[in-house]
Every structure is written in structure tokens, then in C-alpha cells.
Length: 368
View 1 (tube, helix red, strand yellow):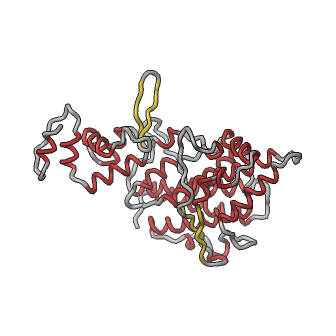
View 2: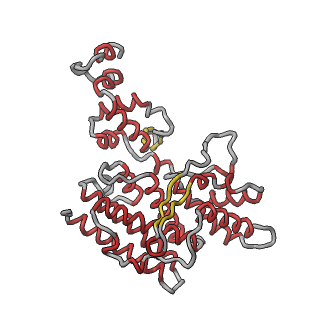
């Protein structure tokens, strides 16, 4: 594959970072090891996503600041790219590594060795999958198999790891132990892992305190960390040929309402992170004009669906921003339904009715 200069450079940085992460994982020096492993692995995926987007001529610079976009925005774009085909499970793993990295880099967390190994091994597996899917290369051409992350113990079932970590936290929080700071460090890692199932996960001290209170009140793991119940890891192979892929197994559903929900399960989320698309950006992403996009938004009910849109206030100005759920629903409508009929039924009132060429279009237009 002939690569653009930007894609070639970014891919090289990605490979260099994943190599550095593997070297740090296998290294003998424990000082700063976990931080270094996660920093390098997160950077590897950010560069790989940007390399893929650059190769496919996608915009990787923020229009307002002129700076390169961050990892989260790159993941959103990659999920909507028909060539990259990044799945929700794959994005969830990358977001989890990023969340754990964020806690390590900007504060501190305790990442159990088994949890670190499973995520780094899964990261290497996914990096190889994406490198081959996008660029037709295997990671084995850049890293000898003999130096891939090696664990002293075989990987455990993911749910078992979570249970063990939860019991460790509960033990640390027992009265008289005075291990609250260490318990909170373990909790940050468990909260970060909820990124596997929720792209809007945000680890905050309010969330940590909520978990501490929930455990103190006798809540069990499924009540305090409900989103982890639906995550599992598929493990195949052994030794240097081991492959780990995280998937969502359809665990406990989580509902966010004001009443009737255990307070220990409510998360603080950054709404701007979820609802990041303006109406104009949504139209551009769909490849239609803003008026056409308005008609599709009305058809799918995006402006009134809380999963698709949210109202923000900027001074005296109130505006709607949209999530990936809105884009997914609108894209399905665009691909599966007749756009002329959608336009005739939901066009903005100041837009002229286009020539009707489809059966039933005139009847729909007459109802506007």
C-alpha cells in the first residue's frame, strides 16, 4: 500500500510506541513501569488512528484551534469510517487503556499485574489486528514474537479478576485498617475499566467517593460497578502466541433516571464528550446539505431524543449538540430509506419542495 507522507510518519510513531510499551512491560525496573507501559500503549493507538485517518484523507485537525485532534475524537471518527471499521469493543479497549493512563499520568492508581497484563496483551492483539486491517502489515514484522508481553501466570477470566480486585478494595476499606488511599487507587483502575462498555466514562473523585460509600454500606460488586458485569475477554493461544480480545457479553443493563436507581451505580459523565457534534458537523459527516440533514434529524427524532442530543447554554445562547447515536440513526435512515420522501415529510418550512419523482412523495409533501 502506498502511504501518504503523514500516514507513513504517524504509523512509524505508532509502531515505535508499541515497541516501547512492550519493552517497558518486560523490563526489570519497577519504578514508573506501569505509567510508562500505559503511556506508550495509549500513544501507539492515538498515532495509529491518526495514521489511518490521514491515509483516508479525514480531517485530523480541530477547525477552531488548528491543533491535532485528541484520541477520543480520533476514535469517534474511526468508528464512522467505512474503511477503518473500528468496532465498539475495539474502541472500548483503547478508551480503557487511555483512562488508566490518565489516572497514572495525572494522579495515581494501583493496577494489579494481572489486569495490566491482560490489557497490554489485548492491546498488542488489537494493534496487530488494526495494523493488518488498515495497512496490510503484521506487528510481527516490527517486533519479534519472543519479546511480546509475557506474563508469569496464565491470564485469568476477566470477571474473576474484577471480583478479586473488588474483594481487595473491600478488605482495604475495613474499619481500623487505615488503607483508604490505597483502596481509592484500586478503585480508580476499576472505574477506568468501565470504559470497555461506556465511551462516556469519566473517572472523578466524586465517583471514587461514591464507590467507597457504596462499599461501606454493604453494596456488592454488581451494584457498585454494574457496567463491568457485561465485559469479558476471549483468550486464545498460549505463550507468545496468546491473543486477548475484549467483548461485551450483554451483562446488566444500566438505567440513568432520577429515581429508583442505586446511587452507588450513578456515574459522573462529561456531556460535552458524548454530545460533540454540531448540526453543521453532523450534516458534513453525513455528506448532505444542512437543510437535508435537518429533515433527517426530524425523521429520526434526534432533537428530542436524550440519547442523540443535549442542550447546552453558552451565555444567553442555547444550542443543541449531537452524539454518535444521532449520526448512526441518521446514517441508517439515509442508507435504507428514500431521501426524497424524508425531505418532503420533514423539510424546513422555508425550503422549497423539490421535484417529486418517487411514488407517494407528492402525498407526503402535501401534508407538510
